[in-house]
Structure formats: C-alpha cells, structure tokens
Length: 211
Image 1 (cartoon, rainbow, N blue to C red):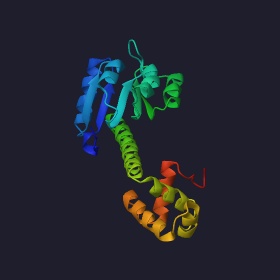
Image 2 (image 1 turned 90 degrees about the vertical axis):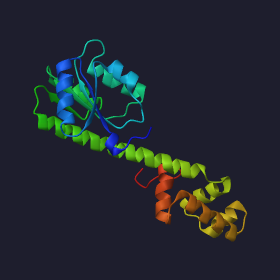
Image 3 (image 1 turned 90 degrees about the horizontal axis):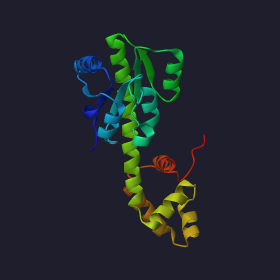
Image 4 (image 1 turned 30 degrees about the vertical axis):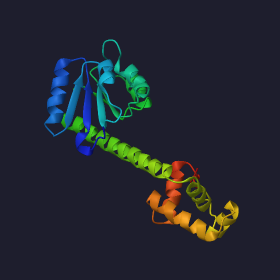
C-alpha cells in the first residue's frame, strides 16, 4: 500500500475514551483522517509500515506507557513523528519524550489550535520523509536495472574519469563507453553530470564533500 498526502492518518493513542473521542472529533473537524487506539499494543498490531501520518500519544497509560511505547517504535518499523500529551506533565517526563525523538510535548488541557498546528507540522515532516523514502526507492530500482558494465561506467564517471579514461580503465574503446554512458543516464533518468553525482551520493557510491 502506498500512502499519498490525502491518506495521511493521525493515530491517537490514549486510554481515556473521552479524550480519544474528543481528539478524533477535533482533528476530523479540520479534515484530517484519524484512527484511535486504547493502547500502544493495539496500535502496533494494526500499523502498516507503509502508512504515512503522525502519532498523538498519551504519556501515562496502564501497561505500556507512552514513554516506553515510544522506545519500541523502531522495533515495529514505526518512523512517524510523535506528539506526546499528558495531564500530569513534568520536566523530566518532557525531557525523556523529547530526547527519545518526540516532536513536542503538550500538557492537557491544551488549546485546540495549538494541537492542530503541531499535528499539521508533524504531518508535513512525515510527508517529506515519505517522499524522500519513495524517491530513494525509485533511484535504487533504476540502479538495479543497470547492466554490470553500465554500473562500472557510472562509478568511474562520478569519480571524475573522462570517457577515454574510463575506456582505458575498462580496456574497451571510447565509443563503447559513450554508448554505455548514454544508456546508463537514460535508465537513471538524469540529464546532467551534476544530477548523476547527486544520485551516486544517495546510493553511497561516492561521498559528498561535507562528509
């Protein structure tokens, strides 16, 4: 399943049914898709790693707390931004949530618009992550479609070899290199050397200057 912008979901995890219902009503009132869960384990069971969106989760819940559930997100391949909420917030709890990667920590009762703004920011962050992940997957598919020789040519070209130098390195003639280079550029769907270098950096074939 591939999620699009319209399919982003706000996953609300709170053991208080009244809170779940009020958050669902609030977020749906501004056009957002919402799924609610009584506890984190139910969320983990239902979550599809291809889904895009964000999590609004209570810090204190029976069984698996929000703080401990946050630690387990990587185990379930959950990369969504997290907004932690609590009626019993304190500095230590907020610091733990934020250092574990939460985008923000909001104390109840909170202003509706404040929560909505944080949710929109979280959705935008995940939209960018999802777009980048899909882009990287497409680049890898393009690279996997190259022949062994086309990959050799790519790696030499992005290292600064001229067509003639690549030909000498591979013990083939320059015209053959030019043909492989043209096919490789077409398959990688790039139009310039600069684009090719950026793609090669993304694939880990060369290192960027600031690394």
